[in-house]
Image 1 (cartoon, one colour):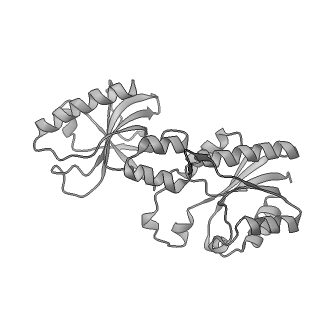
Image 2: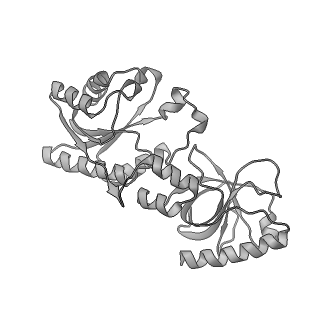
Image 3: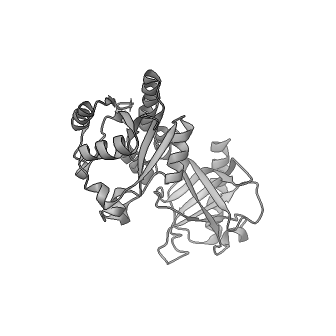
Amino acid sequence: MEKYIATTGFFDGVHRGHVTVLNRLKETGMAFNLPVCAVTFWPHPRTVLNNEPEKLKLLSTVDEKKQRIEALGIDRIIVIPFTEELSEMSPQQFIADELVRKYNIAGLCVGYDHHIGKNRAGGFDTVKKTCDGLGLYCEQVQPLITDGRVISSQKIRQCLTDGNIEEANSMLGYSYTLTGTVVHGKKLGRTIGFPTANIELKSLKLIPHDGVYAVRIDLTDKQNLKGMLYIGKKSGMDNSGKTFIEVHIFDFSGDIYSREISVRFEHFVRKDMTFNSVEEMKTHLIKDRYDIRKLLD
């Protein structure tokens, strides 16, 4: 069985901090003349351990995570199913039984805040000692610090929750994206010249702060369309309490119901508002469209 130099982690979002670890992993693999492997987990431990799973909001799906890691030139990605049995493993058991015996890992290259094993008990000192005892290479990668801050998934989630899209994208290294299916809505937008695609999400991904955003849109047959996206509860127009995600695509017409759509967030334009009339709403939408065209152009 082929040996690998590996890294392990959940890698939510595969942000610039993760990329630093993965790039160092490739350098280490080249130094040992071995292929490299990223070991990750799915589903998220909170859903398995029933640790407030309803509050879980992710930056990436498992497929998005795999695609981004593959794009960095990692030779192999192993997705280990996270189970209650796995959660009970000590750091030593996990390294010896899972990584070495099952996947033939010859060395580890891990992030600065990396923890493994039951209750995340295995910090770097434990990992290093275990690796030394098994004759494995072990290296800790220092954090990526930009503008005096350490980039982390939690900080990115907070930025998105606050509507700070630009800062979130800067830490991610790409534009935050939501993907879903276009479903039928009440079709009010088309009566005032702003037809929208209502998006139903297919994952537990974090929905950014309510408001209006400048976005770029990808459909299966059309890429990099431009548009304006609304997130909110349609105050004064809908009493269901549901959060709506709907996008008006510029210079586009066609039936896209039931199709997959991806929206890439570029700029936060304004907070959600309550309008006194449809005419007042239309006036604001015209201004939004003008402002967003300038931003995206």
